[in-house]
Length: 116
Length: 113
Image (tube, rainbow over all chains, first blue to last red; front, top):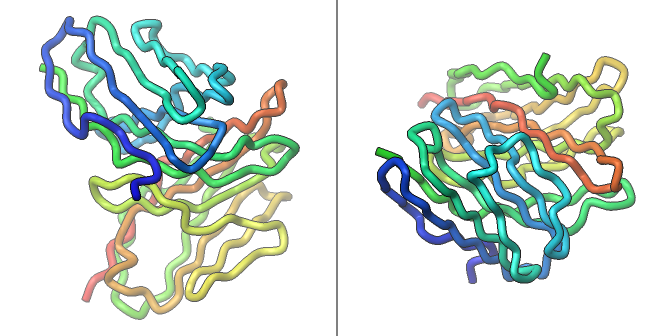
């Protein structure tokens, strides 16, 4: 069974379009994340949600809007796509890293977004 | 200065060799540390946590040096299947008590037959 799944796996679209990427985890985790990995392979956190609430929002353009309908889902909507948005987007989940106990993250397979 | 820094490599080593990677972090409030492995065009996966006392898992040994603010990963008897990018991960906690995760840029290892 897939622990963290993302759809679509590949997304090719034109500048200016709006697109969404979906993420679901069946691990019972209460924290979910979105990461962007650019062409230089640098993995940078974008958002973190705990129990459907936003807890970390790094410096990300407001064209990116995460939505968490429940603990098991964290979707990413991107408006007005730009060339620089081309990257691999990874969803991840973990138990909440509270009380100084960090927990490992489980990653989805990634969504390779190409903006033309 | 980046919060987490790694030598990007690539490290090209022959099978059977021992190789070590270091990762430095800038925030002394960092509290937990991990090594992840990422194969080409795949997602990162946890390799091992890094404990203060150091820990070993088979051919892999991780060490933490808080005074100098670095962690290390040692791989003994390298296998071809060890070829991957190794990502250092550093966690600290924000004002709400939630972990803030920072990944290093990764060190690429290529094990050569």
